[in-house]
Length: 282
Image (cartoon, rainbow, N blue to C red):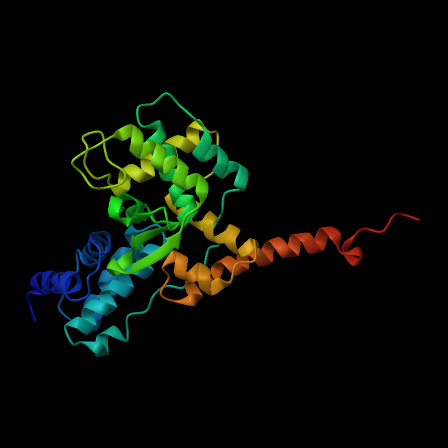
């Protein structure tokens, strides 16, 4: 099999048509497989992964590329090679949720910017429903069911889920929609030209608002999503319900938030348990 690039193109088409993966995921697969030209031998596969290790700073990037290569090798019926592609071990990083006060400033801090109300509604909706940036950008007017208190979301692989929405998010979104008036686009959040917002624009909005509100640290849409899940778990929400609202296919993905809550419990225990307090000097 000498024409590996054409096989990669065929593989990406399969992912789009047969498995319904999103454009962002397809772009990631294409990026991870770019540069692999075969031949389909163990040495060629190892050389490709070694080049990735030398050029990518994070082990997570190499691990993702190795996973993409394994799936591709199975697609071309080379399971013997796929089994030999090993991912580098990497620590599972805990999310860093924002505090409730930080999130309030992020959504409520007002500015005289033209799209301030839109951006406030966007941030509030990200936090109220735990949306990914791409999911918020893709929301259509027909997905809003405020009278019933929920939003319909299409996540990875076009999987549909229903997520409850809070009163403040509803109020801000309705205020924004009323102010923007009628536009030809049926998206909820529209750009300056009246078209769909891009995922990158959602990122820029969140980062710009974080600077304006003096919210320090790495603030981006997924940090808001982390905060949504963490605060639910801290409040006692059942992990299965959190999994459903986040759109995770596996409960193990959602369980990271229980680890965050355990860390909080350890701090509380250390601060208040009588056996952990320092005894006064005699």
